[in-house]
Length: 327
Image: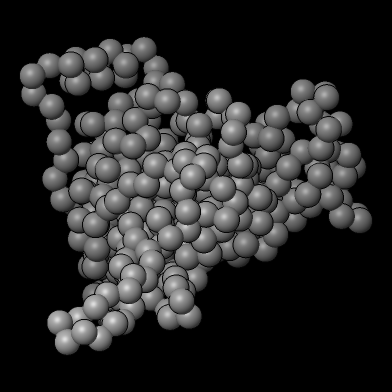
């Protein structure tokens, strides 16, 4: 691909994401940051964990993105009795017209391009593990046979921060499979007023396709080819490494952090920064991208200890302090 072709491809991808962002803003009100983070997750080729109270348009956001990207989307409501076979699929014994019996694989709902795993923490660890393994390896194995998932394949899982009775929190090692944890807050008053006017009338807003699955795959390849300055790389490494409670770390980190982010956090922050630059139509990421993305990338990859919680230290505020010292 020549440099001219590469620039044309970049402009087309940036225009597609801009159209997607504008369309999402017409159906999901007051959540511009959530929209940007979700689109950046897809552009980086990752999976997202969306955390928010009920009624904040999490399901609408995922369904709208599937329509905008032309992705085949499915939704699974996770419950304690959900089994791995209900997600991955299973083999059934069938008898042919000639009387021969043979097993046939029936694909589960995971065989789609955009899967919404609704309230993922309500399923048992066995079912969670089956899904998260597929997210990492992009294939499932049933009865010893490998079945590849479609491309692109993304999971946008949701969690409800309230009503934690009867839930199974995701283990830290499995949380690391998600590129970002995107926290969804309440919209401001003006946005909620616009939402009321737009959603309680006779005419409902809808979104139309802004990109294709092939265009999304090409955009993901562009993200990986995007140049990144050495000072951006150094800032990413300083932020991530300063969050680890190891020998030689800052005393505050050693006193407050139970466990810190691994190398996958550095990879995620680098990819996410480049993805955000592409969505904004910029040819390279900036330190502002790193500052904007540090919390979504790190907040689920580290944990504060009891001493920090006893003193009222919040994880987001702690990450902000790490960023301020690095940038």
